Length: 291
Image 1 (cartoon, rainbow, N blue to C red):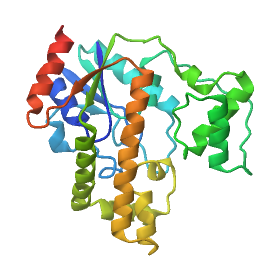
Image 2 (image 1 turned 180 degrees about the vertical axis):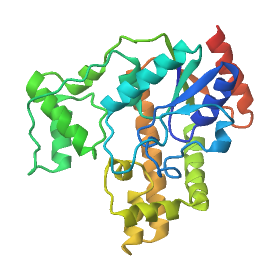
Image 3 (image 1 turned 90 degrees about the vertical axis):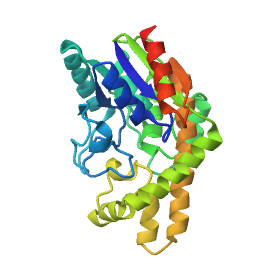
Image 4 (image 1 turned 60 degrees about the vertical axis):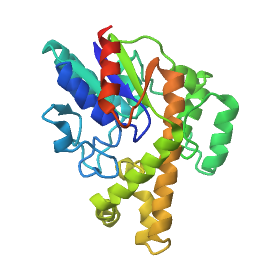
């Protein structure tokens, strides 16, 4: 049995994964596209050594910031880890907020190389997203993710199939339970705001400044929320307060998109997190798994 813990940013997925691993003879596999990169730690809320509590963690901190790492790469790496853990009698526990990574690893998700490659150099991202919505109203691609928008348009041009329909494969490769964590939206948003403030205390500005000074502008640097939003501060174009508010706003919006994706794409069993008694939530999840 493979267990996948999903939910929005800031809801407690990391803590739940460690608690379940300790009780179910499990090991944890990262399912967050930003946490594979060395040095991207505070902004991505990467699990710390203390938080691991001795539980083995896989697919964290193994790619350099200037290396390309695709969902296809993750699919191969994650399946290899899952199969290795199962052979050793361990429970693979995937945890992370990148839904496409989870789906690629756990479902019979086939990647097709297309031969139609229009880059749309003279078309704005907003116009491309408008075109995509017309041919694929169910798309969950973020309106600013130009690379994925272009890929979806190219896929439609070649196959005449909306990209969202391609992603909706229903065949799981492993027996799997999807455990979703949720909480009151206002409480979640306050936790997200508080977490950004804590990140600043933990060294977010220093980490983001290293990214800024490196002049590396790959997916590893530009995808996580927390680096690019601070670049205008380092350039003297915005105040620190404005940049931090941008991080909080983008994080809240990201949480909304995560909810939408998980509810539309995979069969999640949702559990409301008891903030004041997290052990109670852990017990509820364990009861569900054992039954």
